[in-house]
Image: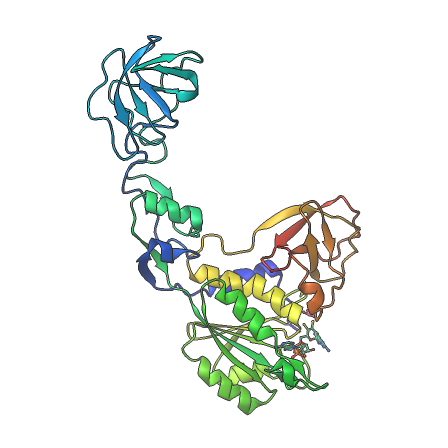
Length: 398
Ligand SMILES: Nc1nc2c(c(=O)[nH]1)N[C@H]1C(S)=C(S)[C@@H](COP(=O)(O)OP(=O)(O)OC[C@H]3O[C@@H](n4cnc5c(N)ncnc54)[C@H](O)[C@@H]3O)O[C@H]1N2
Ligand code: MOO
């Protein structure tokens, strides 16, 4: 039997298969959740002039006042001449500091009588309450590197930097196929020897959240002809994800079905639990994942392999899940010969194990918001020990 790959070896092989999706130009707001195809360069300087950071009175120099009020500078309507010595203007937050002014006296410290302004407290130093031109960014600055995910703040920065559109990669089209004789599509029509097909919907949802176009195939019975018929519909997808039939049973037909369809196996089996029998194959530029049928195994392998491949295809500079150390809230058991991703709940202070670690336990999975990463042969550890974890976006309390 071939030696099983480590998680890292397998992830590296998967990421090496990532297709580079085509670049398209979209309005900035439509780029949410995508990755910048190019470095983002500022097309303008921000702030474009010295601005007031507070509401008050613009003044110049160290003379203690009082000053004659000669006008106003509002955001969007600057004062149009240079201030002379002994003059001030009313200024609002975000308004241009007039020429001749170099600081702002906040209104809480000013006393205004008729048209005269006096400072009765905390005389401001030069540049006090002034946001200097270009302190945020200047035209030509590289404000974000290629491969950055566009979230709400990046979207705001792109607009602020003068962009109406962004160059991003298109999202992949993914076909998802559930297989198994016991599966039914309609949970209401489920005899005792059946179970509702839930993996395809779960995986489809994990990928749709990334913006992928998801095509659902199945559920399909454990039958060569039925599998061939379903696989024929996956021809134009960038990726195919199957679940079930990945193991060694007499009815585990996915590998021969994929090979008959024209796929070449890249690897089968990774030294991890859950998810050991994951299969990865290619057909031309298409990447195919044969995920194990147990629902938790499907979830975890989708999270550790399929989602990162989608990120990489979309141009992400950091496609793999984010790791962080969290404090164990209870004793963690020793681990056997396969590295384990334990389903767990992080409550903001400590992380504790979900009620069941069985790879079919949907109820436990649905209460989970993180995976504890435990190495093979790890010994039992006590509560209070930091442990590496991967945070999940998994509904529930997350
Ligand atoms: N003798 C051995 N048996 C098994 C091994 C092994 O090494 N030797 N590996 C085990 C491991 S680990 C896993 S994981 C499973 C994976 O099996 P398959 O990928 O072949 O999955 P199935 O047998 O088709 O199904 C397993 C389980 O999951 C349910 N299932 C399947 N598809 C769905 C779906 N779309 N929605 C909901 N639930 C689904 C299915 O009914 C089964 O209960 O193999 C072990 N066996
Ligand atoms: O490796 Mo399987 O995914 O434990 O149940």
